[in-house]
Length: 285
Image 1: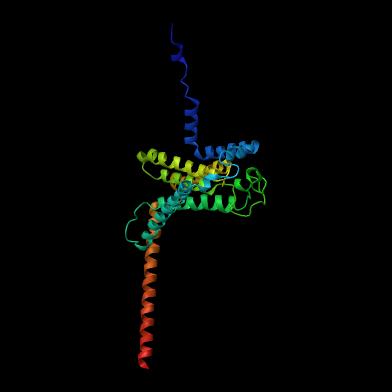
Image 2: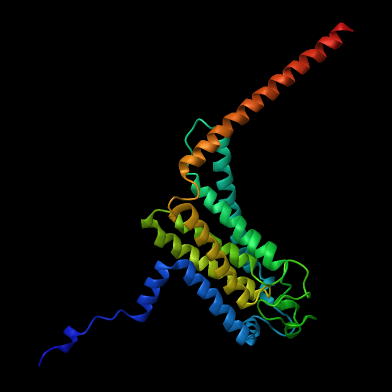
């Protein structure tokens, strides 16, 4: 009996096909992710209340927010973000102050990290969404002992003035750590991703447990932040030609670093001349 399976075209598993397609079209995949997640929570808004209810207890409210260990966990994310951001600023400043020396890293790398941090968690998430959509936090809604009505995703309200629930800033900062994965050598990426992804998940779930955000705030925040990262990465590294090259950045910092040095020298010389004149005036009297 002939093996007819040999004549049938091999079929990849659905999951493998999906991963392959998402890898080939990452920005489209993330836009679809944001759309699907948003649509799901708009159709089934009660899922947000259901997810938050696992962390809410009558009498003690969202008790996780009072646990010292989880409070320390919450501070871990901002600490890592600030540390990476300060390191990036230091690299750029060092090149500016010592223009004759080669940079510690290719300058597109700190530029990529800083620009995605400013655009993603900074502008899109905090300045635009959190400060304008007005969604009350879980601990503020009536279902969990608050005095404000529950609001679904993407609905603009006046129930909260600023720093509101939609979307999660700390989930965005946690997802931003993924940007580091784009810059490490290929052989390190799986190891770095294995550390960053669980950390992002822990930091995000922690905020839901604290009653600070709904589940949808976290999931949509991940997508928005990742979309910003992918867009900036495309502009700086994938686009041909890139928006700016390491060589052009090196030249810009070198030229302006030397101008800054000349300006400091001129200011110093002027101060010395002024000091001499003051001394001469007082000596004459």
